[in-house]
Length: 441
Ligand SMILES: [Zn+2]
Image (cartoon, rainbow, N blue to C red):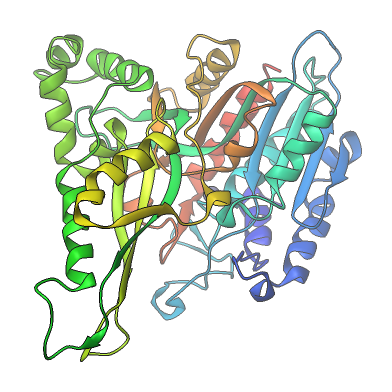
């Protein structure tokens, strides 16, 4: 079977995860796990396989040198639903190839990564490679809904064994082609840190009653003022270590005048922060962001609301805490008589630590890229979305979030969207990256 056929085989399992577990089809998840030994027989004859519940599988390949710390490669085998299936050029769970592209859910996020990691090991083991480091493959089946049954269980198992890895690599930003405006060449954006996550509820109370004799401000009006207050007072912009290193890399790679601006980043920080604030994609790199996403008030057109609520989706900058963020939101909204509280404390995720860019793990990634993607430069990056890595912070010295797929802005559009697809050449190079990485282990 070819690499593309193996990925297509995994795409065909409808491993769609939902917060409402009753909507999930357990047989699809079990089917996917059961098919892996057929797809990757050499790996399965060499590695120990541990199934830790129905949404987690962990592989262990014993290294020959116990003094060297292990390496953990992660991915997830659940996917988001495929809405608007009639708009797709190919079936979202068909695994069809058309014009050099393999279509389907998971071809970018992120069955592609799982397939390429396993196939890389398949090749290396078949060629007789002996690893000095122990290698773990850690795959969860519920990343899209928080990773509690998947990554969290695997992390708990690893922690209980006292395992401390040199490096853990999970999905993340891509080899960006034309995504970062200041640079012409592709950039391998390696996520060395990840923002935190919190949903906050704003609540305004009023007096219910008939809408024909309203007060000057209904509960909904008061709530709206508080929302505007938050939008008009964004969190302070700052350059974290990751962003400073990102700018240093851009100073080497970008054209003038950016080259000079980034080189003098300390002196010109106010200018850079102002420029980054203008675009949502760069604004997210320099501050905690607040997105009002949901609102509710009266159930009926002519009835005054006695309570109005809004949800603010917050992404927290490394170096800040959910508590500090909540305090600031409180100070902004209290004068309007609007209360603030966390929607679901169990889903609050604090921002990650910032991983090293001088570790052996980082150097391994750079050396692998030099072989698989020599046209791209490795650049440290702040990953603004969430991954399973939030569960793994106790078991690795350094955590990186990177998916070795070349992505243009158009390609990125396919993630969680219609026509998710990967080109066959991109797929091949993705596998090449993991081979080059694992060859160093
Ligand atoms: Zn993903």
